[in-house]
Amino acid sequence: MAHTKSILTFVLLSLLVCAFADRRQSQRRLSDAQQCRMNRISGIRPTRVIRSEGGITELWDEDRDEFQCAGVAATRNTLNPNSLYLPSFSSAPQIVYIERGRGIIGLSAPGCSESFHSGESGSIQHRKIRGQGFRDQHQKVQRIERGDVIAIPPGITHWCYNDDNSEELVAFTVTDVTSDYNQLDTKQRQFFIAGGQPRGQRKQGEGERGQKGRQEGEYGEEEQRGEQGKEKLIQTILPQIDTRFLAEALDIPIELAQKIQREDERGIIIKVEKEGLRILSPEGEEREEERERETGPRANVIGVGERYCNAKIRQNIESLREADIYSRHGGHLKTINRRNLPILDILDMSAAKVTLYSDAILAPHWSINAHTIAYITRGEGQIQIIGTNGQKVMDDRVRQGDVIIVPQFFTSMCKAGSQGIEWIAIKTSDLPMNSPLVGYTSAIKGMPIEVLTNAYRISNQQAQDIKYNREDQIMIFPSSSRSASS
Image (cartoon, rainbow, N blue to C red; front, side, top):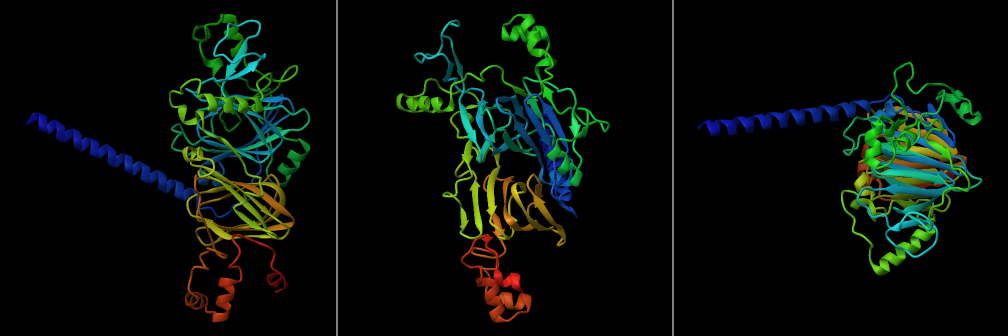
């Protein structure tokens, strides 16, 4: 009998804990919804910058209402020629868009085999005694270029190298800080296993002054921990480990452990010394991959990293031939989701590139299952957004460098300027769905004429015009002479 009571007590306590957990989750969902009740949305510029030896890192203010609503953070890294973004990992999944330049990226996933070699030429072998002719082993590195969308899983160490001698490499990154993978908090956290804090950090003003500041390289001063007690932007791991523990773990002399623990004032992007990195070119690795497919893998992958070992992590989004939507006089749209980049199924994120020609229109639409983070990469245009309260929350001119966040179910549209406009849109779903108001497969196109005539108190002919004038077009429309002249 006592045993039965104990079991009953345990069951009741378990139910109570589950109910409390469900209540907390419900409260969090409600809180998230309240954060999206915004009266104003505008184009956003970065507010902080980290100046490293080999480039700059710009950060958008993740405490703004728009970022809090979408549950994301945004950064932009600019790598000077022959510069290296030091190895780091994030607490949440990331999508990186290469806005300009080309280079090399490497990911180090736990459990993946180190089947690629760098250094001197010679026959392939798993291990060779260090010394003359030693060949380094490492995991796969890949060539990246303008227009690439790159998926970075949480907790996976990665680095990037600009091997071009003349052009900068510019990468825009969105981090989904509210992902289920991130169990810390809703702050962007990038952990570096090398590097350190550069001497002074700077803050960029907002609005027109901030835009001018970025163009002229003028930023106001800001320390890593500002007057408001903001957290340290650069978080390095090795300096906090006990030196003796580190030396023993790596089986190296204490002097060497102390050297790699030193705070590096070069920052998180450094200039590569001498003739650049001596690693196997991605083209050479592709040849080794082909040989491995023919002869079989050299080693089995183990651990959680095996999900990423052979996964494709990048896809170029610039190809016009593969556009999902194409209008000869309007523009084009290309989407990368879990169907053409399966690793996005793990990240639960996706991307789309939108190009509108002169005076073209992106139809009014809303996202059914995702927030949208739009980064203007070229040109300018007018964007209107209608909030869930039925009020207009944005009707502004946007231009290159602006970030606009469009929450789920907010209706948005864009009209390009005379020179056109382009943007990359990062979505918080691996298979996002949009519902256009007009055009082929739209909400209005699917309604009976009688519904439209009664809903708008218009004639049958007027309802037909509304329903069928754009019936053969999808989302992107060229400028209409009829509406322009009226």
